[in-house]
Length: 231
Image (cartoon, rainbow, N blue to C red; front, side, top):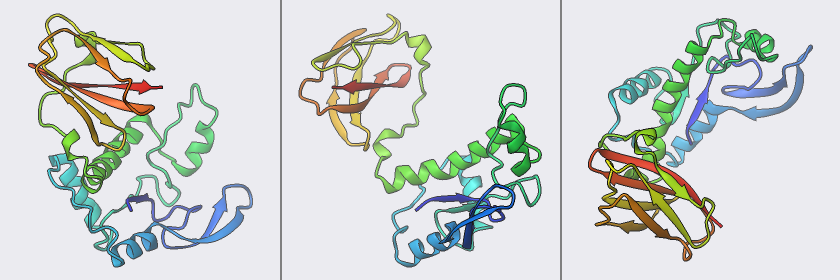
């Protein structure tokens, strides 16, 4: 159980209380236990023992350290206090005042709302959540310290997509494909194809179950990924 919550959110209780609809006056809906108590119980029952954010980057480590100063030792709980005072219940949200009618409402619960502020909070949230998801879902085989190659530089083509029999893959002549690893969306390795050493490859998918797959390509310059759909 991984939770991100603003403790003084006026509408969604952090510990225990009423869920409120933000109208005037606020509409009481139902009494619930919030992220703090849910995380407390998840830790008490051992449900969060599998969360081990190993191999964190420096940013992820700093975010974890900050969260641990606020969450009373509850693994998987990241309390976020915004910068806009007691009504800053969602500091990660942003609506452009010039183009979006929701911006007026956004300022009510995020009084110093800006795009940069939202992106900073989103970066922190992702830094906290991602290593925990990878660890607890055993997705470590999808992580890599190798350089990510820009898809635009590779000029990759995958056709057809969706496909039912095979997918033609083509890339820039300067980026020969060395190998392809095929994963389903649960992170399980479906197929590993090595020794390709070509700018073209026909991936046979007729024996794949219908669904979405992630192709991880190995190049001399690094790795890249592309999603395909098998129908």
